[in-house]
Amino acid sequence: MLNFIARRIFQSIFVMLAVGFIAFAMFRYVGDPINNLVGQDTTLAQRAKLKQELGLNDPFFVQYARFIGNAVHGDFGVSYRQRVPVRQLIESRMPATLELSFASAIIALFLGIPMGIYTALKRRGVLSHSFMTISLIGISLPTFLTGILMILVFGVLLRWLPTFGRGEVVHFGWWSSGFFTESGWKSILMPAFTLALFQMTLIMRLVRAEMLEVMQTDFIKFARARGLPERIINFRHALKNTLVPVITITGLQLGSIIAFSIITETVFQWPGMGLLFIQSIGAVDIPVMAAYLLMIGFFFVVINLVVDLLYFAVDPRLRVQKS
Amino acid sequence: MATSTFSRIRDSDLYYSFTHSPAAMISALVALLIFLGAVFAPLVAPHNPFDLASVDLLNANLPPAWLPDGMREFLLGTDDQGRGILSTVLYGSRLSLLVGFASVIFSLIVGVSLGLISGYAGGRIDSLIMRIADVQLSFPAILIALLIDGVARGLLPRDMQDRMAIYVLVFAIGISGWVQYARTVRGATMVERNKEYVQAARLIGMRPFTVLRRHILPNVLGPVLVIATIHLAVAIITEATLSFLGVGISPTTPSLGTLIRIGSNYLFSGEWWITIFPGIALVLLALSVNLLGDWLRDALNPKLR
Image 1: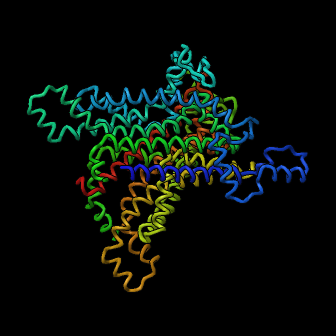
Image 2: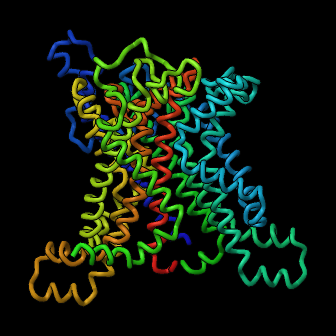
């Protein structure tokens, strides 16, 4: 057990170092960092001096180590495009992305799991068929088209919801929240649903498949034979045993929600990190791209690690096998 | 000779399964129609949207022909520059399909080669390739494609970015998809490597490269075909997404994604057809290819027969 955890943590550190290496290589070798800092009238001597001061003449691994060290302290350099520290940019954009991801994860879970259970228990129902049809649409529609369709229907034709931005936000220190104003709630609905649709269908199909499989097993038949009420069989016995893969997939999907928020944020002009990333790609703003890569890499590694450990904690069979 | 080939196809399991699956036949028909429309766009399309002489700004923003104000000449309406939507969609699918096929082929070559090497050589090379695959697999493909696209743009001079956009896209989407091929092929290769015909080939002194190409490769291609079909749908969607985000194909020669991006600016003034029709084309294309892939996977899987 301890051995397993240690190996997973070691692996995670390796992945982070690899991601950091890519980010550093981008930062250092795509475009000239000096050119992006100074004006055109800087003399060659001044450039050389600046290069020496910034440590760009140091050996490769010294620079790499310094880059990683700075990143660990939250220092990602200065944005080429906006001339402000990248850390400041990311801090101002992070709450928007995290709130959006949180809202869509909640939607995906609280609609996906019940829909999955329902379609598994009432396979022939009319409602089940419509859920399955919705899920087929959810899987085949690209995220940005879902967003555009939503804007067309609820924003342009019905005029119910705002089509861009976060609405009014309330500030708590550096955190800004849209959950405390009416316009904030209205604004988050469409982006959150757009982002949630794909994950929701995935969770629903997964829960359905797992439930159908568990319902075939002997211990469910035995529970039936014991004359237990349907409700207890369905929820206490069947659902509980489907949760392991559901936790894994949901956890891993949390990472993709953050990644896919790039698309949703662009469609709805949601002022989050994803929009920042897209704008920085358009402007070849390397420090912002490198920082975003590191942040996302960190999120993913932590999520993967937690999911692995959780998996281990939830399923006792794994513990026996490994040791 | 021709008749015997024909009867071989007709008597095959695959043909039987195809003609007994309505979903497969319908999606094959839809995919074929879009494919033919795209390939023969210069012949089929009522206008050439890139020929500035035939474009008239007075025809801009016309609704589809069946709505009031619509002109029969423009069946699906026109965009802001007076180009017929039907024509731009046909030409756009051409680019989408081109990028889709090219990046699938690129992924396939990289993935299959690395998979073969990894499975056949084993040891250090194998674990190096597989570690890279693991790291890449822990991030969504779209994110990797975006990142490669962004870096490649940074490396290119500004005036070349538009011209190179297609190559950059193919490279980015291709690299983001090789892992699945490599993993599948590696597994199959490790099984084949220990079979007698491979040992016999090695014993008569064939070079490893020849063994891989002539003997192992043909035997691991079955599952690759399935992955490639489903990957085509993914690649088309990825291209559309990148173009929609504005880091893909430039608006002068639009793909479906670029068309949707341009059209989405006109959504608020009520010109929905500029964005919806390319969207429908994209969904039909992706859905039909996806369903074909699903069918192929089930048809080639002996366990399900």
